[in-house]
Amino acid sequence: MTVTVSFEFFPPKTPELEESLWRSIRRLEPLKPTFVSVTYGAGGSTQERTRNTVKKILDTTKLTPVAHLTCVGSSKDQIKSIAQEYWDSGIKHILALRGDPPADIKNFQPHPEGYHHASELVTGLKTIADFDIAVAAFPEGHPESKDLESDTINLKKKIDAGASKAITQFFFDNDLFYKLRDRCRKHKVNCELIPGIMPVSNFVQMQNFAKGAGASVPTWLAKQFEGLEEDPDTRKLVAATIAAKQVEDLVKNGVEHIHFYTLNRADLSFAICHMLGLRTN
Ligand SMILES: Cc1cc2nc3c(=O)[nH]c(=O)nc-3n(C[C@H](O)[C@H](O)[C@H](O)COP(=O)(O)OP(=O)(O)OC[C@H]3O[C@@H](n4cnc5c(N)ncnc54)[C@H](O)[C@@H]3O)c2cc1C
Image 1 (tube, protein in one colour):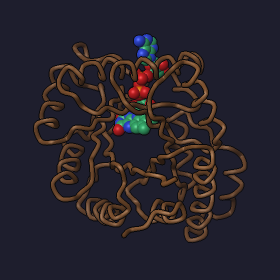
Image 2 (tube, protein in one colour):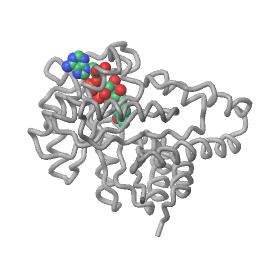
Image 3 (spheres, helix red, strand yellow):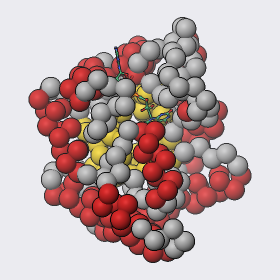
Image 4 (cartoon, protein in one colour):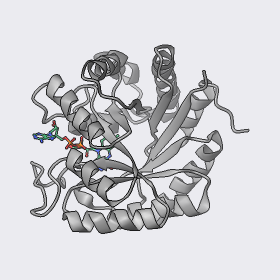
């Protein structure tokens, strides 16, 4: 079985970061990912940069870009005009999200004339054009969900509204993913369920991401990075080994597509893809 892959990038803030993003895109492009996705900053803060990056990918590469789009801070009309512009310029794939509030605000507040939940955004997008829509899934449950069952029911709502695939938050214990897959089967969530993998080269930074994302960091993982704070080269080798083992187990258990959170760096994702058997020719 050939495994397929996809990569997530974030829109760069400075010319230096722009250069490093494009080096990464060019390095990963020959692996022929099914799609590459571009995030939308918390609070909708990177709207313009996301649009520019997605359009540049469409115009200058052979890749299929997926634009992340959130409900935060936008009215339904504003979302409509962004989505229409995407469709008209050939961007037909969207990752539809509720989004998180900006860092200084605790709880999500919908725009008074906006969408309250990702499922509503999916419905709204489908009335604009026949986008191929992905949504978010959470192996450990979204932090605001009452329990895992209601979390799965919310995922079902998003799929029933018209999404075709769900990409998970990152996780390190594959059983969490397998249990989510079982819950999806039980609730008849009919979609492709794609595991999101975060190769961890900076353990401290990843711990901060995990806190906000409701992802747990197992003790065994922390132990693997113990004492390597000042040793980025060894950290990288450890990170590639851990992620390769995780991905290998997923593939053994029937997973056919892996999504990598690249953090705009190609090296780890490239190495893991190589170990998965992907080649650039
Ligand atoms: C693959 C992936 C990519 C991401 N990319 C981005 C990004 O680019 N930009 C960004 O800002 N964030 C991003 N996020 C984070 C995401 O926006 C947050 O996790 C956000 O808090 C939830 O988004 P959602 O789309 O899952 O929301 P929803 O599906 O709306 O769910 C959010 C919460 O509301 C609850 N809920 C839903 N509907 C109802 C209802 N009718 N009544 C009561 N409760 C309800 C759900 O159970 C859940 O607890 C990403 C997450 C993932 C997994």
